[in-house]
Structures are given as structure tokens and as C-alpha cells.
Image 1 (cartoon, helix red, strand yellow):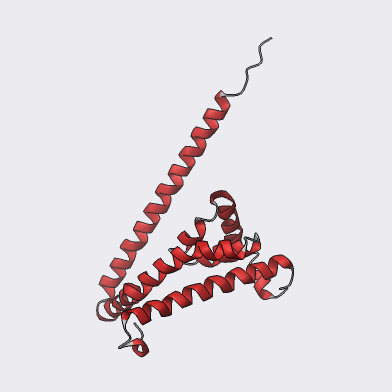
Image 2: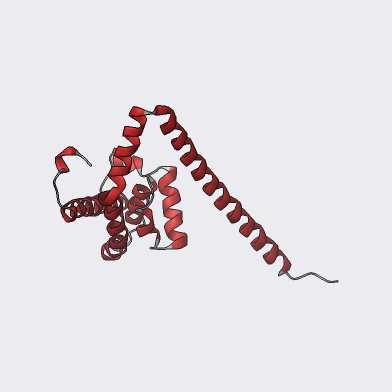
Length: 174
């Protein structure tokens, strides 16, 4: 935790992170709405024409609003999701209500120990860089394993769906 937060009660830290989560999600949502309405023709508008934002739009269109609170648990993709919600013109109240559970969890993670974990990782890197590198590589390998497994399952389901649909086509008989 930053030194300027030393001595803060946990509730104050939690509310600080909760306010930050809401302000960030709302700012990115309204940025997307402004670009969608044609009001913002700036470099921010150009940034929202990125592949990650296009994937976020597709994810919202496929899975719906549960993507919004889950996005709070990601790094990087959350910005794309919040902006994409504005780009596809999700109603403000709907977006805000779906943001509440994600912001509550995000604030608990970061206010309750996320910063301590980051500080611990930095302290470990300062005292034992080899161990920190090993831990970092192990975490990266775990992420790669999870992503590859999810991709393989998705491809298997798509293949099974193709086979199922291929079997339903009528056969022309002379």
C-alpha cells in the first residue's frame, strides 16, 4: 500500500478503491458513448478502433451484460469492455447496475491485499530476483496453460457443433 495510505482504516481504503473503480468504469463508458455519438473525434476515438475493443464488443454481443462485472477481474480487457459498452450504447443505468458487483469485488481485492501482493512481489524482486523471476515464469506458464485449455475446449465445441449441424442437413435423394 502506498505510504500516504498508512494508518487509514480498512473501510476508508476500500471506499477509496471503490470510488476509483466506479470513476474509471464510468469515464471509459462515457468515452465510448461519446465516440458512438460522434461527439469525440480525438485520439481517444482512434484508440477505441482497436482489435481489443472489437473483441470486447463481440464478447458483449455474445454473452451480454454479465461480461461487465467479470471484466473487473481482468487486466487490460476491462478498459475495452467498459468502452465497448458505451460504443454499443448500453443504457447508462443498466451498465452502472451491472458494474456494481464487479466494482465491489475489485475494491475488495485491491484494497484488501492486491496492493500488498504487488508490494511483496516488488520486495521479492529486490531481495531475490531469481526467485521472483521463477515465480513470475510459473505464473505466466499457468496463464498460458489456462488460455490454451480454454481455446482447445472452445475449438472442440465448435467442431462438435459443426458435426451436429452437418448431420441435420437433409439428404437429397433422387
